[in-house]
Amino acid sequence: MRGILAAAAIGLLVTLLGTPLAIRAFRAWGWGQRIREDGPHTHLEKMGTPTMGGLVILAGIVGGYPVAHIVLGSVSAIGVAVLVATLGLGLVGFLDDYLKVRRQRSLGLSKTGKILGQAAVAVLFTVLAVRVADVPTVLSVLRETEIQLGAFFVLWVFVILASSSNAVNLTDGLDGLASGSSIFVFSAYVFIAFWQFRHACPDWPPGVCYPIPLEDALDLAVVAGAAAGATAGFLWWNAAPARIFMGDTGALALGGLMGALAIATRTQLLLVVLGGLFVIETASVIAQVIAFRGFGRRVFRMSPIHHHFELAGWPEFTVIVRFWIIAGIWVAVGLGLFYYDFIARGGLD
Image (cartoon, rainbow, N blue to C red; front, side, top):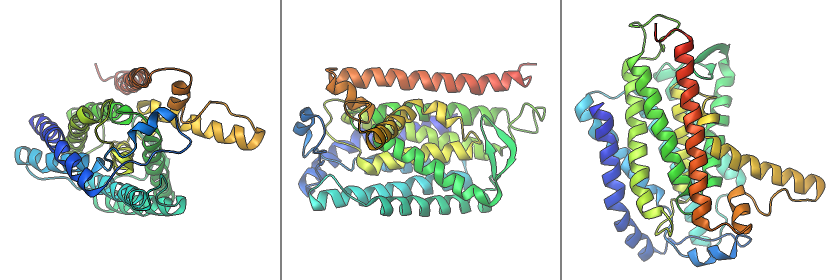
């Protein structure tokens, strides 16, 4: 527990104290946000706000992780693999952000370029997770199932990492919306990983326990704690009115980290519930595209759905807070399902 708290505290301090330095540096370098031309007109005043703040979040996560292991000792292969996936997707996001700044447009990497980058990270993470960390290539919901994916596991990993990273990226359209919602999910994974650490085999009956090595479960809790702390410190400066944006650098990294944690903790499909807000945001975009291209009509005034409520007259801060509430409810439901599964298997007997 001390290691988790240390990781969270260092992550918090790095971003809380380091973000103002990044704001000044990014302004001097001209790393300003480009705004969607078709977005709400109220967002035009945000033009030029420093972006790529995800670099500070990554610094907080990477800084908190080794400090925690001064307390815990050795690191685990799966913890390192999760960090590699996070940094890899952060790099893809950074390239996207940098091209936007350099071209002075709101368009960065092409869709093909972004997909190829995400695919490369997925393959690397799969190799590290399966070959080095011995993560089983099975489908998991609240825990491992008996459905063996075999060679298709790498494709499944790509789907999870790409979906989760893009979902957070779509949600990152209002000040603090994505960062605040991400804190809920990372906090949930602190609980899940630590719970698995406390109830790992062979100390518990086979049907109740979690077949995940003790050091792996604890290390994943450390990574999630560092991410929660780093994102919380960044939110201090990212909350409305934002002084800095995380950009694709942060959004892809945080979303990818969620996906990697879901795979590493053997709770792949539970992420759909824990990240319920991100699923809603993504579904709104899909519905809008299908409705417009297929029927020539719009379901929403604008997608993702948070912009729909803005155009309906809701103040930006009202949309953000209400969506945070929705994110918190989904996380509560997800944790409830996780705990119910433990109880249903006789965990309290």
